[in-house]
Length: 265
Image (cartoon, rainbow, N blue to C red; front, side, top):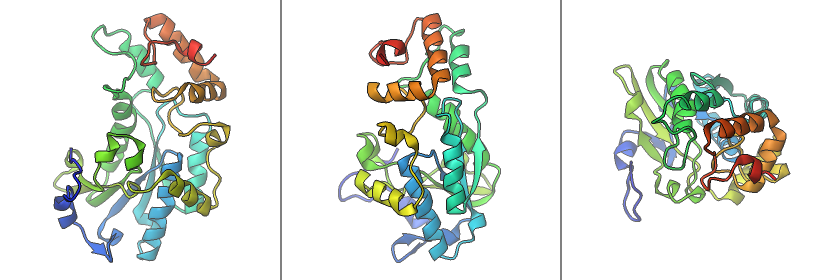
């Protein structure tokens, strides 16, 4: 992983292989541009930012493709929200799916003693299996010079504060394909993001109106108790499934060991 150090250009090697126009990435150099969209505030703002940049540079909309990963633990209306965003932006959307939905993955892992049943902060197999892998599978269907755009921000966490704007993606490279990663939202503050969301004219996801600060999987290990209560109230089928899995396995989704039924009281 590239490490960010003040005064040091950590992604210089990647920048040297890319073309820029007045400091902005030249999107015309890519044969396909994938935009990862979850429906949350950051990807909401990013979708329109990339679309607007492409329009200014004369990039055909056909080169843009939004990707949404349905993990099997999404909010019940997240897919519809992403569809509305992409329709408003005029960008084609493809929804990708994992080999098995996340809840089924947990159940299968219960049968393998050495496997951790639920994801943890140090073992986030949920992200790799249910989001990254399905998206990578889609990208591998294309050839040429490819750009994969994601919406991480430095202010989100200590780990993300080390991220660089441009990265190479060797796992997706082949003789026919060279893939670059671009994180255009890194330097934006949360206030910036909300201003950009308002400017799009498209309503934000309802979870924010209810009191959540993020739109992730319903029942995510990073959800705070008050967010979890909202997520489980609005997505009762996920709550019931997780509650059963905790009872059957003897383990919990919480890092503190507190059962989900107790956390949502």
